[in-house]
Image 1 (cartoon, rainbow, N blue to C red):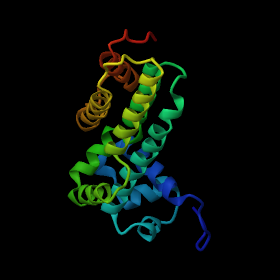
Image 2 (image 1 turned 90 degrees about the vertical axis):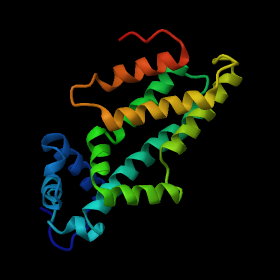
Image 3 (image 1 turned 180 degrees about the vertical axis):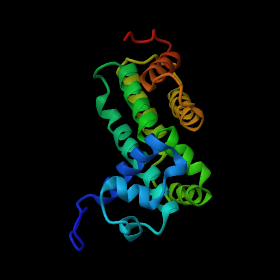
Image 4 (image 1 turned 60 degrees about the vertical axis):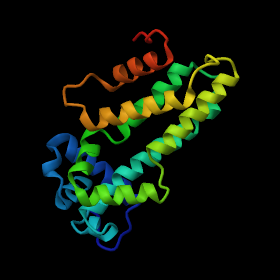
Length: 199
């Protein structure tokens, strides 16, 4: 337990990671301020010192994970010409599938206050699925210019299909769904019309 008055570095990320641990182990019903701070091994009031309440905390957790993935997607264009197009897209799809996994994404949907805060933040310009989709389309355009993607490929449609399918998986994937990598590889192979990479 951290001593009173001593600053904890990266407390937000520590609380976010703790919440994900609670969700993975016990499910959404167990997610309380006390459970999160207990998992993070910090003072019980720490969450409320940094967030207005649990809804704001959940919204910020989801937005933080979206922003992390958006940063990774933003680096895609610099990867044009490296590895394979399929490998690069699988990496982004995996980042999306694992950054705010089904439990976290589903939790936001069941908390109307958190959903509203997320929607307002996205409308105000916070990076989300639209940002990621734009970065993927830009990357595919760069690959097309290099001749590594068929000239007639509808890159905005491929980006939309990739992000839209991942969003669907995040919202609906049951606990027994196939592993994330297998899903991402199958999806990318279909979108690019290439053989699925072998394990």
